Image (tube, rainbow, N blue to C red; front, side):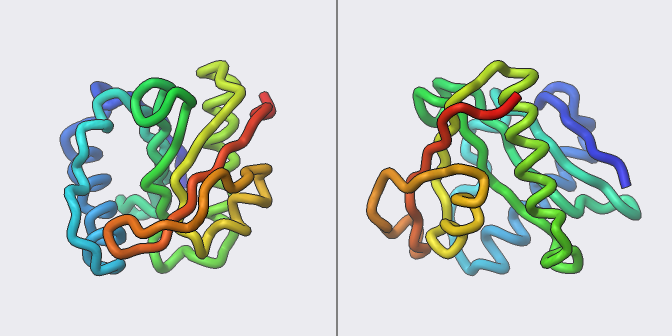
Length: 150
């Protein structure tokens, strides 16, 4: 199992296809949420993913400041259903935060989290900065983390 981090332009056509397929499978089909999954932010982002048996099993999109928010951000966090509850999600977020802090020099990260994951993100030091609100039929909350460890 290998971790990869790439810019949009560094992704092969096959990697991009596999990423978009897995994101659509999780966020559109599994969560039964019809929305425009390909939102124009991928080209400006870094893509951190893990592959096993030629399949993406974990993925996070790392977004520079000024793209989604004035702060850096991440999103599209997913772990393939066969690998959930194994600690892979925690490892994924840790690696994403480390990249934002170390490689990108970001010390504040803002996210839009599904509200049922608020405690998970709080375990990384994120704090809610909004009330829970509906986004495409799924309850979300905005969260921020200051002083990202590098």
